[in-house]
Image (cartoon, rainbow, N blue to C red):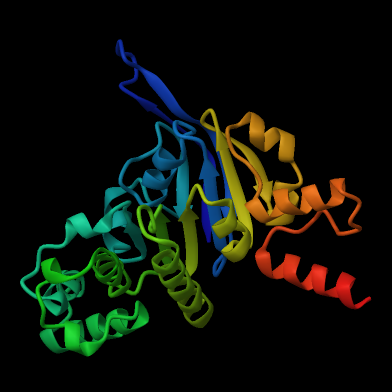
Length: 280
């Protein structure tokens, strides 16, 4: 379980450029939850993610994972590999001579043997759809989408209990985006890992997240199931966000007199609702 206990973070406190990025945020994320995190640029979500991953410590409050305060260096060291963080454009972190060597680096750094690290790496590569014929290639020979998946595999090979992804599909085409997120979702369901997905895509939030946290001005503005968050259309727009595109289409249909539910947030739900209207 993850507990953010009244956490705040201030950059250069007491200095000329002092800025409070996160303000008194509190929430609990249960094990095995697929949680979305959204917010406009400057909302504080990136700083919050860094605190959850243990990269920076709150200036006030604490982050607890399984009841342990990860601001404590000794505790953080003992939990190495518990939290996996995939940065935006993670392919810039690739450095191995081969794909397999690159993905093996993390497990070997945790003390696993060559054979154990190779097994972990191969399993992670399979999870992201990278076949064995690519394992001995240089990662720099791969396409952009393949590089992205290899970089994600490098984090998955650590077998994290908590996986944080900061805009993992930025810059990819729709097919590449769906491949990566579908793979992450399948892994989440199979391994019961906790996933925190940072994204600007309301469609991704509606499709994958069980719960959404919305940051605004450093504070937690909304927190709930997708349907409970997206019902706040005007408030989301005030924060520079929006509802999924299909929801706007449904609103247009309703304005034209089509008796369709306004609480539709995915293409699949819209298809089902329209089919029922057509047949009924």
